[in-house]
Image 1 (spheres, rainbow, N blue to C red):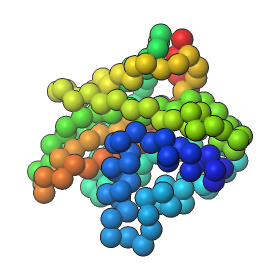
Image 2: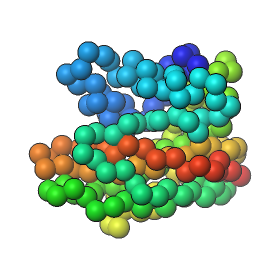
Image 3: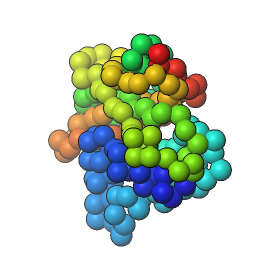
Image 4: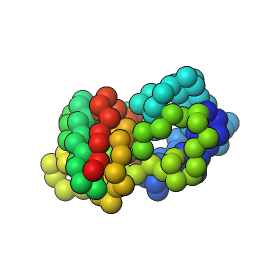
Length: 168
């Protein structure tokens, strides 16, 4: 599991790299250790990635109230329902993350651990589409992206769509 999580971290999209770097700032751990430490107990005996927590969220960031996704030819389209932003904050995007369905501790290659990302940056911020995906089943999460009262970009906790999505 540790090796697979390390590979997932290495294959993060820029959004997750940035978020985990921010999360670890000023703390006694580095971003990779924080990600692995959070997720080892979650996926230790899992048979897929659905128990993974790609990002636990920044302080005060409200997670989506619902995430649903639909796989199609080469893509996954999501519906991410974001509650009202905290006072003084602005919603700037709804996002989706997806990873190919695999057993987390099965000697996966780097390409099998790649996480994909897309954001809907136009109001009403609710329909991100991840395009260019290979055929297969994917675990999918949604998140909200905000600008907080200090002008910083912050991310909500990720929320899983419990169904595996099939891309054709």
